Structure formats: C-alpha cells, structure tokens
Length: 179
Picture 1 (cartoon, one colour):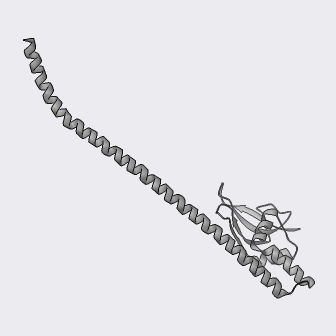
Picture 2 (cartoon, rainbow, N blue to C red):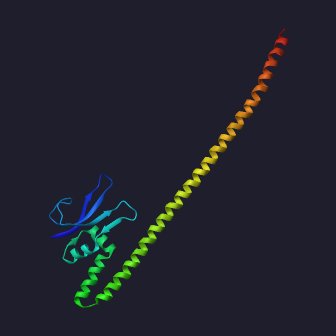
Picture 3 (spheres, rainbow, N blue to C red):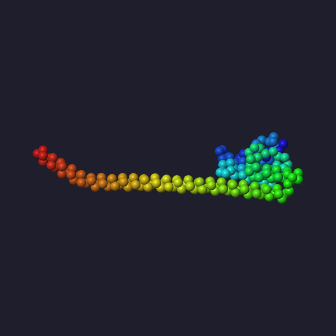
C-alpha cells in the first residue's frame, strides 16, 4: 500500500516536514518514492508547499494520505479536485463546470487565508505600537524621577554651604558661652 505522509527533518524543537509518497512498510524518515513538497507547522499560518499536480496524480492512483496530510490536501483543494474529477469520469458533471467550481473554491480559500494573514500582521503591529508607548511612558517616568532627584540634590547642595556657615558660627557662639 502506498501512503502520502510526512517525513520529519530539522533539529530539535524546530521541526520541518517533507510531504512524501512512500510504501506503508517503510520507516517514517526512511525510503520514499517521491517528495511532493514541504510543511512548516511553526509559522503562523503553517506553510504548506506541495506540488498540487503530483499530489493529485498520486491520490487518483490510490495513494492513501495520513490524517495530517489529508487535512493539508483538503486545504489545498486537491481532495475537492479528486471528488469533482470522479464526477466527471462518471458523467455527472462536465469538465468545464468542475474546473469552474474548483477555481471559485480556490479563490474563496485564498481570500480567507489572505485576510487571516493581514489580521495577524495588524495585530502584531498594534502590539508593537502598544509596547513602544509603554516603553515611552516608563522612559518619561524615569526621566522625571531623575530630574526630581537632581533637583533635590541641587537643593541639598545649596543648603549645605548655608548650613556649613551656620555650623561654623555656632561653635564660636557656644565657645563664647562656655568661656
């Protein structure tokens, strides 16, 4: 039995996967028949690069995708294309109608994906702006505290010579009082 599945590569905690067609008896990262593409689950949204025509070829020839790969193929429209092609083969629908349905579905899916990417980008920009504003407030508060500390130090420095003069005179009066 031939399966379409993921083969892991990449280092620890930074997994990348190859989408491969392999014999079901072969080990996960072992021998495969053909590499169809790559899958990176760490990006948001996950990056899926698959040769659609080759994946469609293998699905039509009976290759069984694993659950994860089945979800990816469904997301890319390959399973819908298979479903429509089976309808064309049975004569239930024309090839032109099937192509039209597939193209409409793909355009809707791309628009939805694009809106998600834009929304994520906007939220990241808003978070960065909020962080910058918070840092600015903290910076201003620190500058104000430093300015107040400098004023207190200046006042203390101004008061210190006056106090020193007062102390210098005070012992003399005390000495006179004792004498």
